Length: 278
Image (tube, rainbow, N blue to C red; front, side, top):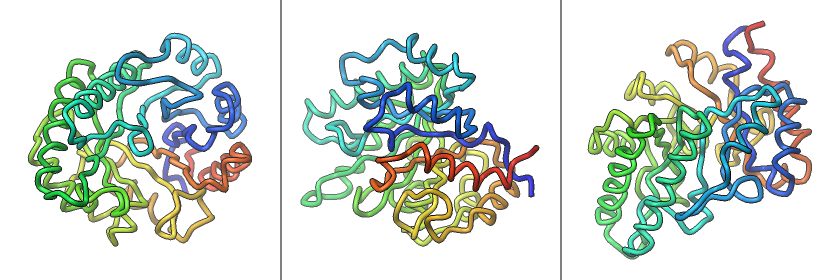
């Protein structure tokens, strides 16, 4: 059944942490992937609050292989930068870091930068952290508008945040910020953990859903398709029925894939090829 195009599947480099950028890109070509969602983390790309790698060099590497980079996903869970940082110095450095990421997205020719709400301390009032997150995302939306980038906000799991972890949370933040450059993305893992469905997200956000992290799960996992319990064909049908034309980011973070990521990407693409337009 033809449900997606090859270009919609966006390979990511997070699980290539122990390999070079060149190896990752060559592996994407071998797997039949055409589109990249770039994680600008070391050793593939250096990005902090003050500087970042030469985008011309990175873009040339990507395009010389017939690939295109369409989404940028700056690290925001394991590094020191996050969207609801409390301390003034960390808050400002986080803003500069994510602002630089938006500039990188623009220089690479991306259309979208993936974001989330960040998190607050568990020993503080949730609403105080919420205010910081809302303020940060509002400021970054202004930066994104100047760079012609759309920010796509995903929900997180309860282990990662106490802010935007449900569909209702996402709707509240989206409405509160109310900025044309802030849009929404579905993360199938956070969605599944929350007990939600893809259709519920489309019922609420409709065309404001511009990206997905579309991976298998139990519902936890960020797994290669076929390694979890999700209904890949059913999920893809729902996307098509709702007119979704965006990308399917392969955010694979399970450490068991890190030793031989290329073989798992081939296996993953094989599962998608059954549903691709010929």
